[in-house]
Picture (tube, rainbow, N blue to C red):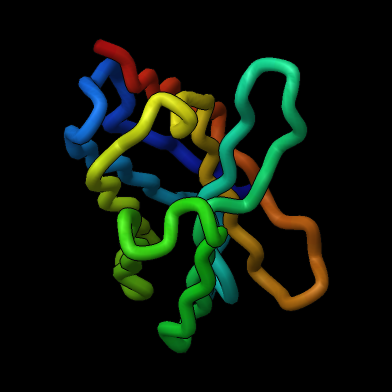
Length: 117
């Protein structure tokens, strides 16, 4: 029904920057909320940042002031600009799209981000 494709992961040195993108396709009228989650080995999946179709954004405390989420609501795309990356940001990053409030939403396949010197 809805497909999400992430891109932009890879290896970056501590202090560096990286930009992730997510594109949604399928039977979509409007996406209520899009979000980035991440999961490091041995950890649970956690919310990184989310944004509603109205532009309201929410960030995890660990990424506040370093990461910026943005959306193109009409194009069903989302980006995550990550600056001043730290080794603890290493994880698989997943795109999530919720079409209607209260639903769990759809997931992308994930993209690996590795922060290492």
